[in-house]
Length: 116
Length: 114
Image (cartoon, rainbow over all chains, first blue to last red; front, top):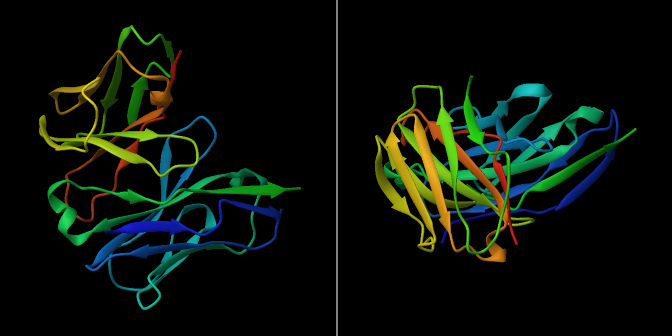
């Protein structure tokens, strides 16, 4: 069965430090990968997505992620975080066969806490 | 209004009440979704509609009843809920259900069942 694992439930980091949020998935078919961010009291907003092509994907707010097929990972990175990056981050996977339902499978989420 | 809107933003209801959650998308999309977000659990897909037709019912109890009168509106009717149904209910839409289409989310309705 397909699943998405976010390896850290909370990541505390100081402002202007780099950060990596880890995501691993399991699937036997081709996948499409997404990272969403959820700020307090808001819905989810798409940060970036990987569909095909270059394995390094750049998104909004200075975030980027790298798809590693052999390690079935899609880790999210930012070289220098800001206080405003404090939020919940969700990794999600859509399997190739999901076209008839558009089903996204989400990880449990990682809380990024940026400290001054 | 732009994007995906949801009303109400907060709802407190007793176990014997009947209430409805409303979602509206202003993006011209064809597919709409209901998700349940509980604390420290992955988002759970509840229902999927495409062009007003339900295409997925993810083993959701019958006390949750969706309705999609047109491609812009989606409702979730609630009755005789349980305390464990307390959660954030998120609505989303996408251009279509194809592989590459991203989903746009509303702000959610925070539901508390007392």
